[in-house]
Length: 280
Image (cartoon, rainbow, N blue to C red; front, side, top):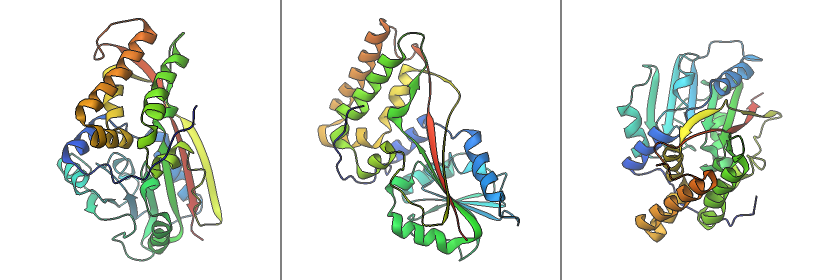
């Protein structure tokens, strides 16, 4: 993969319409991610699972899976639009949404067994977030940070997997590279440079099962990406639409078809990477 240029960026997920698109097209976390985090917590924590704080929760896609493990899930996000959309969706009754920063968690000291951040930690002020997580975690409580990279998706095709992947890399890295933020760099590096400040740490990764999708759904997912949103702010929505159309055309060319994106079926899978640290 070619190197990208990196630029500072602003928060991406502020608008209500963008938050709705995020809820519709961003993937839900695989069950094995949630189960692995809870299993790691239980390796040394033997008490009741009273509170999970899901920081940078977006619309709650990664908050809900913890609901049946914990008495309460407190889901927080800096974007009021994301919280507005989350509250309009159906969630378990023990999931509560709050609009606040990752660096100011509305929980009392030592009250929390798990501080989770899925596809979010790369935008935090990490030293301040870790200090706050350490404050609210109980002894043997866990910080879990996970994400996936858009450009690391793997297409499943008998003969065209590599070419489809190159079309994705060309769009996301080469065409949008100069519109990446510092958080995108962390994701690109799979959190290699994020160090959880606890002595006991584990880093893991795993692939999801194959997912059936359409070219239109893939384009809609890419439209929610922060670099694409930055591109549209800089160049205009029409230019952004042209860039998505270019990606769609490139994929159609690879597959030697003019089938409409809504009917062009594809399969792919994604890799999640996970860092967990346990408070002494």
